[in-house]
Image (cartoon, rainbow, N blue to C red):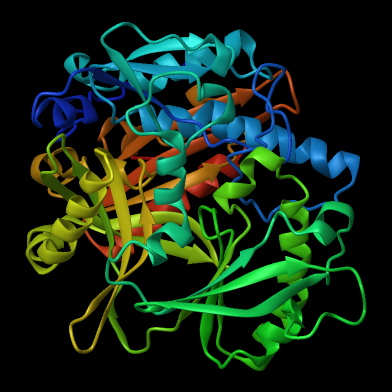
Length: 503
């Protein structure tokens, strides 16, 4: 008896509620057309021969450190390549719309992962598909005379190109320090600025060799303290080492690295045990990143530390997803809830039924963010983490002046809720399927063909360690059904090839 040959699963077409191309076009006329390029520069490793390690625009990733072995570093490189040259950049390009978008080849995949990128984007309605320009590295990016580069994050080797916003200004807007100095409603903050020019730092680095001087400048709700480095046991008068400073700071508090994403550089400290752990870890982490900064990048204060007050009795904690059009007009796209596991972002969820009420409730905060960003010359996608306390005060605790992974949820309301009656959706990032895409869709045939499971990022690392990575969005009618579908997708990713789910 011949084995049954399964027909290919038919993935329904997706029409987004809007796209970045439409949002850019909807603002006041601009002189040049933005061309998005979504890459998170890596400060630890070269992602390829053409994509070099960042030395000026440093971004903190605490999942690796200076004590990593060669094997650990190589594994880290594989994962970083997969994310930032593969499925994450596909996922972010998914919402770009009918406009040019740059993507980098992935060196560990057949054909640079182009076939998988094209397949991910092919489920979009034809009039919303981006025009992808594939290149090997930043130095291969070329802007037309009427184009301007719209990066997700400033990148060293792209600085020579015309940008939508000056890269150094953009880097400041992305920073925790920049938020503290913005004038927006933020928790009271203490800035711990390392003096990168201090002569002792030029010749010495040791995990516990950071000191806090007694120079203090009060600016509104923000206090600034300057850090210097020393390798001597007896610190100069007026100084204390960083670990001691953390141990003496009143509980509770939040401490953040200057430039970080996905919760990798934020610590909530509410207990003595947590404080002791942070006092041990932060000097080591700071020293690791300080050692990477070239002299020309020191002025960006990449290794500042930010200590903010803890906001108690939080009523809601939405993540605002918005777009600032040319001219400063804010467009509310939606609010998502973060899924945090072990202190790190592991996806987002959305309830489409709540969006209208949230837009009205957060209108003042949204307007203030748009006004601030436009005053600094920025327009484009943005997001903000908000904490609203019992008195109704809305505190901005993080400002993402870039596109975000969660934006895709806000643009699928028509697809999931209006067309299919599904009010809840969830983004499942960085999955590791054991089977190829065709096999996975066979395992989830009913859900995929119903349009309740969307694959929005896929990478086959077939020239590397044979790893696969995927970003998947799911939707359901209630929380129990959403949890069940999430489990079904994760189980299918872990399964070996087998028969598809029964109807």
